[in-house]
Length: 239
Image 1 (cartoon, helix red, strand yellow):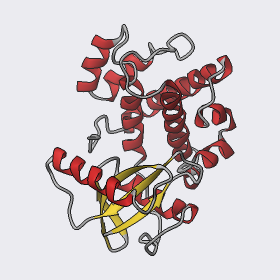
Image 2: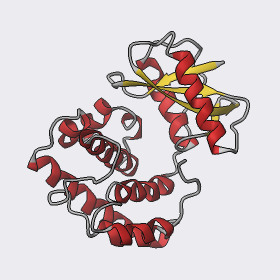
Image 3: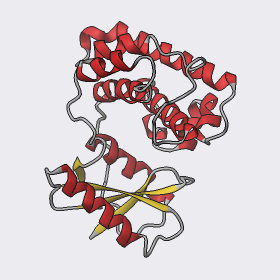
Image 4: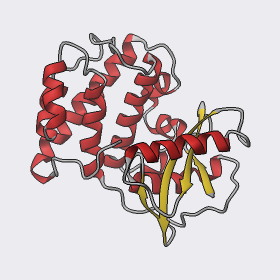
């Protein structure tokens, strides 16, 4: 079994890509494999929680993954491999071209999902079944300054804000040409310093929430300006 640590050097857990010959089509089986790998690797990495993912690699390129998208995970491993103690040689020899369109569509889903138990629940339920245009209409109704609760979500509030900041940081890194910095908290802070508090899981100040609104508006505006050139559906949806 080959595995590779990736992501932020100061992460609270270990993100690990486990190389497999194939990834089961059955979701429960794949989840069980991840859980088993978490338990096995915890024996040699006992100091943090583990978050294992399954990947396949062909010709030094990630071709498939269980969670996320192959292009993002390929480049994340390439750019962040040296941030961690590794047990196997670097499997990725070069970054590949990212699918910006896919990231744009996925960001919309990530954001609205956190508000699926609010007063917007019915609209969000419909939007999650719809395309990017449907999600965009819901996004226009989200105000991070006013909507500070995430009912019935298992994630802690500070983790949700960290995810939101990370998603905005990543998508605008792709749009604005600083992709290589987009795979770690410190890399995103380098280019988008206004996300520092949220990425470091600090209690959000009013300024932090207003900044999320600014990037939400920028995201909506970018999508609207480019809508005729965008694919409106995700290629692969998260498990």
